[in-house]
View 1: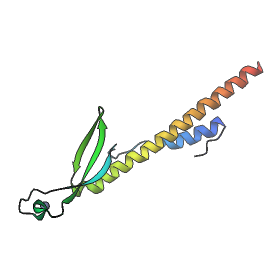
View 2: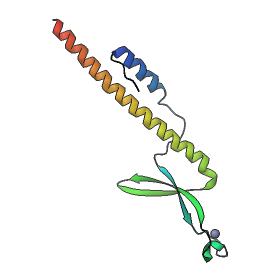
View 3: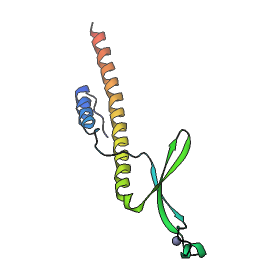
View 4: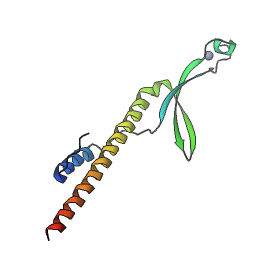
Length: 118
Ligand SMILES: [Zn+2]
């Protein structure tokens, strides 16, 4: 992202991004992982040395600990959109932060110029 010097241009970029901050989607700050496990069927080949079944869970940090929540296959598409929404908002927040820093610098520069003219 190229950040302009002029505060008006910075503000315009900021407002454009601030509008995109709202969402109606659930947001999941986690990572999706695949793991292998035996199923609940005692007669299944997975209990007799056969290949295990792939399953998905999400992991995230909570209070300094890693938490894991199982994701049923049927919920995978929806969970992926929740994860994608978190990525989108995280990137957006980072850009908003960068633009706000630039705005602060531009305004401080402006005040310094104004003070110098007195
Ligand atoms: Zn099995």
